[in-house]
Image (tube, rainbow, N blue to C red; front, top):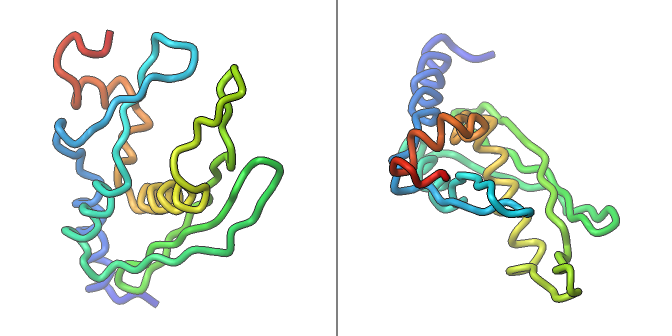
Length: 146
């Protein structure tokens, strides 16, 4: 059972975790097919927010499972005794249309980064990124989204 004091502290922590990041910390990626872009945050940026707001946070990962060309795991983040988790999946290998390997880093490293981002989103970190029109207005200079 969570005490009223812990509940209030968790609400304050979550309110801080949910705040949008400064525009300069956002990254821009072109989506396949060209023309469209996606604004995102690096996992290291997300880790820094967790360290700043809830320095006692703890993460844990499940064993990696493999399904076809995908590596899958669960990641949990615990703050003040409350654990929230999320699923993550990344392709083991990514090939260009010409058959060239395009994966960067090991599948395990990419999976760990994706998993921590997803678990942090369960706590509210970067959740606003799902609203890309808002994110583009917040994070990009005028006209840069075209």
